[in-house]
Each structure stands twice: as C-alpha cells, then as structure tokens.
Figure 1 (cartoon, rainbow, N blue to C red):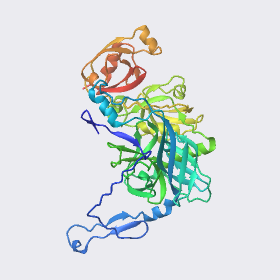
Figure 2 (cartoon, rainbow, N blue to C red):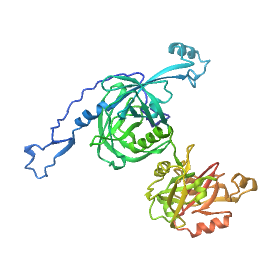
Figure 3 (tube, rainbow, N blue to C red):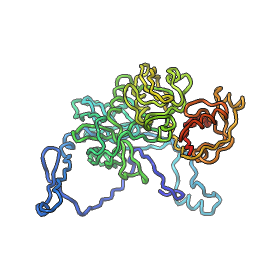
Length: 491
C-alpha cells in the first residue's frame, strides 16, 4: 500500500479468516521429480549432457510426502467465536461533513455497525499429548468465547484454553479425548539456515494444506517481541496457518508458524515461526503452574555496532550494551553499570542484544546467573540474582539515531532542578548540537551523562576525555526517561 509516496511494511499475525475469495491460477512449465529412497528424490542429468566439459551435477530435492502422511492426523483446525465492542469512528476521516457529497457517500455505503459485534476466526494447532493437549498461537484464541477443535478425521471438540502467553504468542488447549495421534517434538536449537522445512495448517480454512521452503535465518527479533528469537523461513503461510507446526526433514516439529512480513497482508516470501523450545517451555509452565514466570534483569540495552565496539575497546561488535540500570533492580543490586557490555550468561555467548531478553526470561526467577561483562577494557564476571518479570522488562534500545561525524556540542552544567529530575546524577546539558553531533542524533535538551562509560560533570572533564580518545567516543545521552549510547566519530 502506498501512503505519501512510501511503502508501509507490516508484521501480520496470521490470525483469522472471515471471508475467503478463492482464485485458482494454472502454472505452466512444471517440472517432474523422480522418486528415490527415503525422504529424498533425485533428478539425474540427461545423457546428452554427460559428454560436455562441465561436471555432471545431481540435483537432490526432498520428498515430503511421508512427513505429511505421518503427521497430518495430529494437525488440527481451530475455529473461534467471540464478541467485540465496535468503536465510534468517523464515517470518512478527513472529509468535511458539510461537503455536499458527504451524505451521498455515507448513504451509499450503508449503515455502520455499532455496539457489540460477533466475530469468528480460524487457525491451526497440533496435538502434543495423546490425552488432548494442543499447542497453538495465543492470538488465535485471544478473547474467544468459544473454541472448537476439528480433527483430521472430522471429529469436533469444544476446547478449554488452559493458558495463553501473549509475550510469546503461545497458547495451550485441552480437548476431552484420548489415544490421539501426536507429533514428534524436535530441537529448534539444532536447526540450520538453508535446511528444508514443511508447514501443515489451514490457510484460508483449507484444512491439511502442506507448504514447504527453507530456513532463511535464525534468532530474528521482531518489534514488540522481546522474548522470541524467531525462525525465519520462506515457507508459504497465510491467515489460518497461525498456530500450525513447522517440521524439519526428520518429521519433527521445530516451530509454530506465527507471523508474516508483508506489504499487502498476504504471504510475500517471509514468514516467522516461534522456536519449539520456547513454546515447550511455556507449555510446561502453564501445565504445572497455570501461568508463565520469566526472569528479569532490569536494564535497558542496545546493539553494539562497530563504532561502539571501538569506543569501548571491544575486539569486535558483540554482546548487549547496557544503557540504563533500573533503580533497585536485580542488575543494580549486582553492581551492573551503564556502559557495561554483557558478553555471556551462564556460559552462553550473547552475540547481539536481541539474544539477551529470551535468555534472561528463561532463567527461573530467584535463581542466580553468572554474567561475563566488558567494563573499561577488560572482562569481568558478575553474579546476579534474577528477578521476576511481572511486567515487560529488558527493553531494547537500538541506537539507530547514531551516525559517524565530527564532535561539536555546546554544553553547560546542570541546574539544581535539572539534576533533581535526573535523580541527582551529574551531566552536561546540550544547548546546541552541530556537525556530527547533530547527525548522530544528539539535539538541544539532551543531557550527556558519560563519555566511554566515564561519568562527566564538567565541560573541561568531557574535553579531556574526548582528547584522549582515538577515533570515536560513545556518549551516554539522557532524553526524557530514556538513556542510550550514541557513538560519535572524531574524524
């Protein structure tokens, strides 16, 4: 969709199908696949090409028919119904009600629904226990008054939602049945980029549909999804596929199909699945405790780019840079500071900032974790007692405003009232920003709190720290309630 000359990209939760317009397209130029052994097929080169100078290459493609045959019975269709309250919205936003055509268009469109409305939707799910335990997406059953599960053999059951975790978009259902077919759970951590994967679900209500592709990437972080390191694929998934399983070539479930990245709202080659390791952890907690507990550190983090790595003396851009430590948080009690870079947690390397929130979230609240951090040019080990994330925590600041340039700031000391607003912290008030400081995103009204992790309270001190720096400096900036490190190239 074009809006003011730009394309609006949207992440679409593959949720509900209210109306389906079916369009069938015949494709010419189809190719054949010759059956081979196991789950694979081979198409040999033609004899007439064997005498050429180029080496003969056998193209090997997977045959997924056995995976579909073994698992389709354990994939279910989920129908939901619920009631939502309509919102009072303008009939034609931006159009003057006094315009003579306003009433014409309003009459032509017909009456608009108001008050409570009955809505219906569809999704997918899969059976993980033969006594009726089913996994699906939380957004499939969100606000549903009634959930109906339809099995592959056409039997239907009313389902009970045992729990739904919006943060990971995972829900657990139960139906009153026994001796049901189940899927085999795999290990999403072993998934490799480039391997073949298969999805089974009910896109647009077409039950037991199978689509295939490859894993495009791992550990993808999406907006507002801090706790899920998504698996990206090019498998065709559409509305109704939500909650369906993603299989590897061993016939094991490695993910739950959840979202797509699209300009139009339909599939355009990029889809995302929740790793099954994340989903099973949520399922275990819901079945045992009826809710999900997550670990909390209490820090604001940002990505470490090349400029920041050089500013802090890191050998390479890695880890999660702490921009702010919340007062009285587990991080504060453990002695973590703004400017520390978290390199690993309990021996697990943190390659980028988006890896930290799910790692911390999976640690049981109240237990201890060993962090390796980078502080003032050296590695240190810090033990922290993990808190309980009753609300969203470990927010991520991405530092996208930073860009290289020449340092140029007009600064002054903080007034007493300004210092009180910063909880007594020292810093320098930015009265004007020019050159690279402005290009880096620094602007009047910001407060410079530190240079390369060293707190500053005077212009002379800042100048001395900048003079000792080589190519770049990382300035910790306070803007309102937010804090973020901004790298500035000294030229």
